[in-house]
Image (cartoon, rainbow, N blue to C red):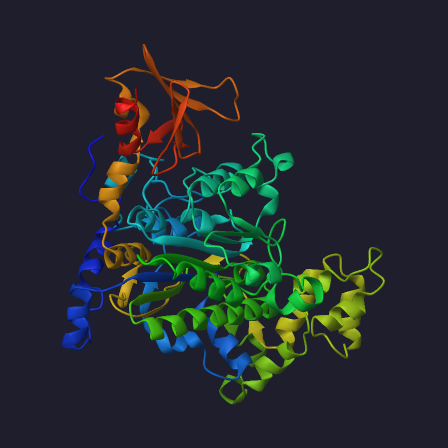
Length: 543
């Protein structure tokens, strides 16, 4: 396939936006900084599923400015290649690789284009992997890290560290992450690393140990680590909500603590670093229409932003970007209760009822007895204090207690929700430091801004990192795929006296029984294998 001029690129509108990022309403010296940024480090923080209303409500709840408020610099359009409302996988892929893609796709090109303005050439080679900014930073000698309060294999961190044609492929994503040689990996998702939970029989915890990571599972062990390589798995799946942590999972670190520790560790690299931080669970709370959970982990995310911003202010050579990947829930401050009174309804009418809650919905529901005998106590944990007779009847008769509790609290707090799914509105852009993006941009521009600041072009790297196996070796040797172990397929190149084997998801090639380490992982996507130009060179030169 011919790589189009937009390959691995952005929408037509996004391409125009890249050229104009930060050139509106800026002083001359700021414009000059855009042309020649001196960026050693990039920290990208993603608050998953946080609508602008959620941010506003969180600020009111806190009663003070947010760290993010210092960095407001524009807006971001979030749509995917096919829809006005994106999923986290294509949103993460856009911010990581600079490419619009389809629902559930992680780090690969789309198979269909339906959104106006998106370059149709992107669908010429569906499922083809494309380079992300973490891989680009690593190839340029920088230290790298990813953090998430969900499973580290979840859509957003996966988009910055792997390539898969469906976000649910946790086994493939986890294996690629382990073989990417990322310096710091912190979050949940331990169960996807354990041999007994994997279809392919891989013992990724053993590989992590062999690769020299300090493997930690508690907050104290993380903070005590002095290693340059840290892998933290703090939960089988996702971490607890910040509000619930002290009561339910006190051994887990906060997002701010993980961010600070990662910066301390990665900043020891003289070449600089790239760090992606995701506050995952505001999205989960929004799906449940739980404003307490949404606020809890939006404020937790803001604490992490403060750590990044404090470092950048001292360092002077660090770009910080904070952004939501998409909206969720259609939350509104004001509902049918305030139709005729909104102009005189004080902030306290929205915030005070929420402050009655001592746990998020997830935390409160975790305290429910098996027989449901403590429903009113659970409701009180969630802020339904001194319930009315009508509220008591609803709680005691409910067949969906969680749904009933969020409905009751929303009524008390005069909040509205339009959906339990994602929403497609534009969102705020927060950025700081040399080379920072600003203005109204595409989510794809975030990847290109980060890459440009670190001195590389994503489209050029993609052409070198991901060459289809038949294209790379078809004229040189016989190309086949060994599926004798269906869960561990191997790309095989046979040239008579020389035989090369590329095991899927790993950064190694075996040539005549000798193993060589590669600069990137071998990916199988859309039924095809992809290898790097470096891998081709190694195979052809190997004895």
